[in-house]
Amino acid sequence: GRVGVIVNTTERIRRLIKEADELLKQLGAAACVLLALSLTACGGDRDGQDLTLRGVDQTKPGVLIFGDSISMGYTPFVAQARPDLNVLHTEANNMGSGNGLRVVEAVLSQRARWSVVVFNHGHWDQPGNEQATSLAEYASNLTAEVEIMRRYADRVVFVTSTEVSAPFVSFTNQNVSERNAAAVQVMNELGIQVIDLYAVSAGMPGLHNDGIHWTDAGSAVLSQAIVNHLGL
Image 1 (cartoon, rainbow, N blue to C red):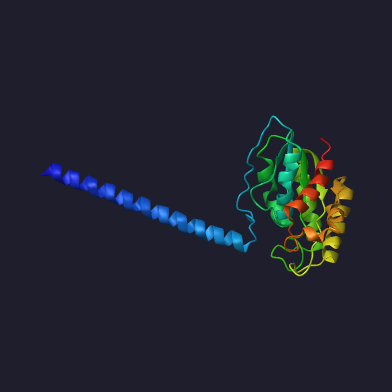
Image 2: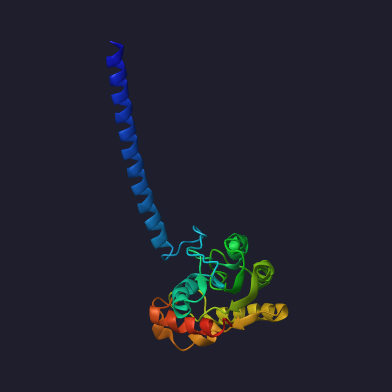
């Protein structure tokens, strides 16, 4: 009678829940595959998808490294060299100056105060890239970023973009140098210290692994220039 109906209904509900759970697992697996494919297509960078800072430690002086995949490469070496500091980079590639301006406050606000912010944009802003900016737009974005960073940090440091080698990239070292010069002019006007990583990277193309990104050995060399200018 009624008890049998209730039992059958309960079993049907359990079966439906189990089937729904299996479907969710399959959808989750498919999403992971699609995400992996998209990350591969974008050169392995997170492309702005995750602004989380993992490992925030308010008991140590905070150092935020904010920039593209070049900075993502040398951040672990900076952290290794200075375990007394809370050295962090977003899980995401912060990409060009336009994207950086859009997301920087959300990143900075994850910690009460920063001792130093070290940042860079340049490669993504180059002509032909999806986030290309004019030199005037680039200068304007950097200026606005510094204004925001100064509200959260005791000191802000800018890093010039590193050398590239053909044929991987669509822009040249002349393009990189012109944009670096524009950035340096902005930083000089704002009283911001500049670390010239372009000069450090010049002459070590053997440490490029694809013409723009650096091998671990190359990133380690770049990290030393950052460590030497932290002032902490």
